[in-house]
Image 1 (cartoon, one colour):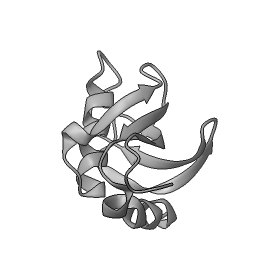
Image 2: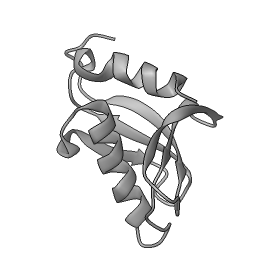
Image 3: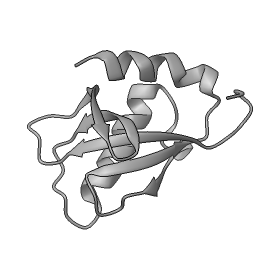
Image 4: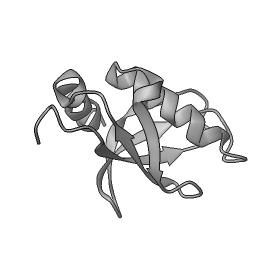
Amino acid sequence: MSSRVPGVSVPVRVRPGAGRTRVGGRYDGPHGPALIVAVGAPAVDGKATEAVRRALAAALGVRPAEVSLRLGATSRDKVFTVTAPESVWESRLTELRDDG
């Protein structure tokens, strides 16, 4: 994909209620190879989803406003859209997925 194309999908597997926030590892989920994101927030009222959105942005080195939920509001298997240029975060995503 071109780095000028906004809205790249990033599949994520959420582990809510974790002891600490951690981004790393790979999960072969329904939306393809997913990045595992563990957050302390409970899976209640979108709290875990928002915590994941912010953790994902921080891990990829992009602004939280550049990460939005596309699919899976009530599922552990989510797809986020990242609108920052891929050249900024793509290699970091690969490193995080391989960190299992």
